[in-house]
Length: 574
Image (cartoon, rainbow, N blue to C red; front, side):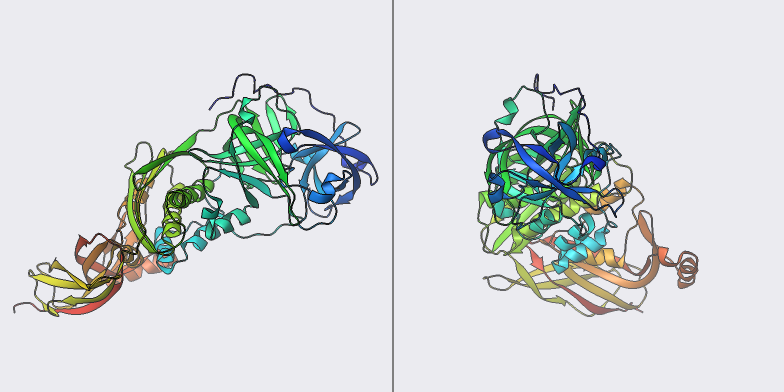
């Protein structure tokens, strides 16, 4: 991604600043912003005063826009960053507004605070503690995986006063396909989704100037997702914009493109700008409380994400941000399904997902979902897998590519486990045990699947348990009973690859057997040893109470739900 010829030229002269002490009530000035069809306008304004001085570096200058057109629109989402000048000197960026306001009163972030925005290390995924895979699978079984992901990646928080919403253009995919937990994600980020796309502004060859629209490109390819605001100041190859955070991620590496306003939509709640974005001309390198910082000519490589629905491939490139990549992958999975089919009604979604990291074996996951929420369930599952790997605390390379293959049927192809029946309840070491799964498939006659377990030689007499389940339920249960402590990123990849899909039946023989989880696996041990370890390590020791004696699986071709535990007795010939 390189800038177009001539588009990287920027103003080198720094605008003279006016300090907070000179922002006296009654002073007049102008705000420069872009309106319909790219028209740049100078909006007269009056300073009302300064608020927020009780918070550390939290000064906000209140201004009233003195232009009749803003009596109808109020402060417009997309004006974030619009430079405010007093007597030709730069005061700051228009960055705050209030829904349902009856007057066009906004808040200005002082530019002297925006100058403190600086690049930093790109953050790791999430704000809270990363859920382990066991917790994610348990949440998926409960139907609360979306909430788990949001509470990890985007914990709910409040701030006052509220910055203007960040307008996010979704071009090429349906807006209606981002409902549910994804809509809650957009809300938590302070984003307002609008129809948009690419085109128009990419042809400009002039320098980027204060008052121009720019956008952080989050997705491009067969769809375009970009977040736009206004440039406050340009100095050499550096651009300051927004006057408030886009996400508040600190150090970032997001492609930066020129943008152009198509139209302004007045709204009683909050007016906003429709816009298009062009080719990248640089990169956003910082996203902080007082604004964003971009560098013209810098490059921000993106991750290749492919989504194939019933054989129709779509190609995207997504920003390599550990919070945004999982969320945007989920959006693309859900929205691409909606583009190819229906958005309501019972559906069955079979998903194959492959995530590649250089110099590592790929993570390959199969999963199936059935019901009214199957597209959304497949989307949040994809976000969980990507987020889990991107949120690893172990050193790992940047993700190379993500491929998601979806087979979608507009009918319910699922079954419940009605009963699990072993051939007998008393077994002998070294013999085979037949196990029948009675399945009730939706709208079909009951069917029976028979599996065979081999009872290991040499096991002592006593109780063993037959556990039967669908693959997804078994994976969640197995990690709960026998937690694995990954010791490397490769271990985490292997753990993801071990997950069983719900289209697979699993039959297992378990025995009560004390042990402990260690890096890369687990071990059995006498109770005295486990007690000593627990005394030494306390809560840092994961105790294992059951071991697996035998396991067999079989594929049934449709998602199944259910699990059962049955007590058996081992009795030797003697």
